[in-house]
Length: 408
Image 1 (cartoon, rainbow, N blue to C red):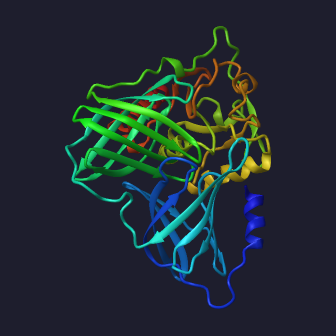
Image 2: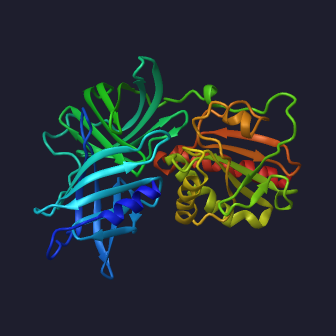
């Protein structure tokens, strides 16, 4: 992805003459799918000391983007998270048109994109809402192969304005924003990796039907939901455990500077160690990294260490290093981030890196190691700040675990 950005930047060309100014203010962007609804989101464009800056808006979330390069009427916007960038051209009417490109484990994902200035409505307003769908919903999402998967929607409706998130056993869908229009609902999000849009018919105040979840260029799943304030998620299928009679925990991997770091290094001895199983492609890992980085800065003096083990899209060490440095710089990470050299899609990723464990099912997964070097607890998944009470509960349990282990 970095090589691609460099090549495209060199080849950027503009029209002869004075280039247009990109208008400051709120914009509406559309990522165009092959079928189904476009994925829409808003961003703000501004200038600080003459330099362009962009803020991607998702409900209460603000994602700042400052690496913006322009030549003539061509604009490259390199997002500060994931292997993700916009390649755009200023049109005669002042709009932006081009492509969003994102690295994946296989081919580069490409979606056509158009953005228009002065448009604040994410979805076109229409008939007033038939009722309120605020609350908790038990969802059933149907995979393309026809099998169901559980989820829980947490929705907040104020007039026509709709926000919320969706929780799955592995984590959450982060910040969703949209509208209720008559008896229909629409939600979307874009964060540089997630590119989602949801639409559905509101059959009654207790039932949502005929839903479709569109993700990226092609993926689509059907869904339905019933109101259930006591809805919960099954977690048995994603839990990781220490294997019976497993040998002591041992690993050694290079950090972002190429230095080998081992769990047996002196810095980790007689410390409580939190091991983050993550990938730079993972939005929930982004939220967890933000949390862990702040927590580590506040508590490292108490005998706490944190280390990340990254499972990336490829075994290309340079590609992995570049993507992980985005995380390190974005969240000012002060603990080691190690490159396992094993891809996230490798079915033997656990056996090759942490054979003491049963297979890692989801990212992120968090391992708590006591002062004696043994594994004390493993959490699978992470509920970020978009989940409200679930995030508060997660943080409380995390802190209780760390405090207990520090006291042993």
